[in-house]
Length: 604
Picture 1: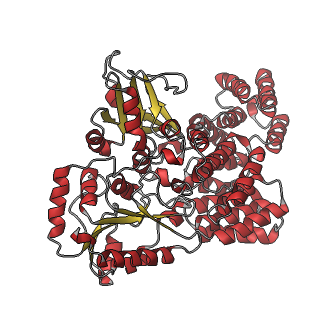
Picture 2: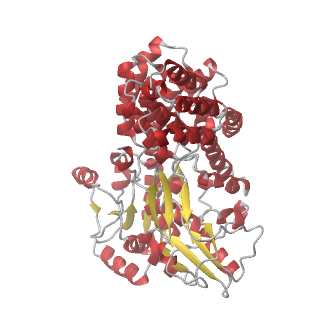
Picture 3: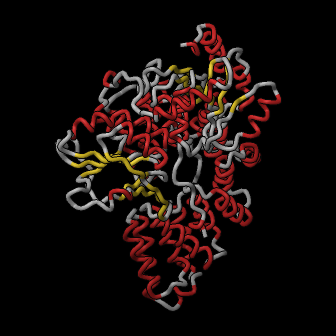
């Protein structure tokens, strides 16, 4: 069963993700052509229940009619009416699946597609529809099997071949994706869909100039192809064509196919607006992250209404602030927590729900608040966040309202100038800081440099943004006068062994770098410097006030057209070039490290 394979509900580095992954999936289970095929199935009487149940036939016709009119709730009701009397009606299951998918009930849609496929194995369109939905929800291995099944019965099918390449791309099997597309492009060189998907494969690899060429070819063939125009926007921005990117995005939105594409494009637009420092419009547009048509949209399940800042004075009230997505995100948006605590005042109470590993850090940093952990689960493919620590409170103690942590930005940071200067707002345990300073002294003289080099989440275009290949860091690792400290969580044994073989020693502290965040924070502050891409670990360092150098992508929205991270004003930013930018930025960082050693930072 598909639902048994639930993707991980969180990503530690979600805040620093690039724009939504360029899309290339083709086809629509409720398109006129698809519904016409289902009408033919109905007319041919291929479903055995149709021959004996006139009422079922009428209901199925009504369901098809409703789908044609985009009345998916009505279509679902008609299909369910058939299934109440005949659960073996495969066509009813298929129609129900289409309707459930269209109204964003992904769990029931998956179940209905599976039932339809089991009952109507000869109807290979069901496998194609189910494969598309599985890909959208991240069930990539299952999506691939379904698409291969469909193609076995329908060789040379453009949409299915295209979608199989998309699934391979999403598994980072880029060579396989290109080889799947190549023969089809030789047969169908006028297919804008195929050129667009080839562009998405190259985009995910960071080959932006090549991706741009293929998106433009797709648009030459079909100037109204909204998906290709959206994808071109996401490439033009990191290449420096901001005006062109925004123009493409605005032009793509009217042609978006369905609520999912509208939400996806609006998310990209929000990131661009924030990146341009267009505030508070950008932060207000970023509310699209809660749109249920986005697969990773968060639903917060708490027994309180959402606070309406424009209508409700929060002074003296009880307010729950709920952290979002992952560690990096929560640290970035913690920028506003002191503001909201002050707004509530001592006569009220602020509750803060964050990633469990950071509860003690946040409680120490915001002592006037009550801090606890949140939990997230996927229910029927949707991410739902709970806040267990408030559930035991009495009615006169529990929060009266809740509010997303990221949404505080629109309230308290209406302009770039509204971001305060600070030396860190997260406070590590001073005793642990002293302990780690002592441990670092045992390593001998030299600038103690905490090192991160990759994200734990390497799906899609994140790999090009957050990973550089550990061997590329060799110039940094060999900096004379530096002692490298491994702060990178995850399995990095091979990377460290390669460094050792190359003559560069990296010391690894005896802690769990993924879960012992109190020690990670304290060790970061104890180091003379922490460097790496904008992931959870570097955000911990920067938010704690540790001297931090971040490698940023040229379109990282946190820059907001400034020369630094507005959230962490003391942090130095090294902006990586959009194309093959890692070698140059590593060389720049090495030169800066040489200067730091010469200036005797570790003696300060």
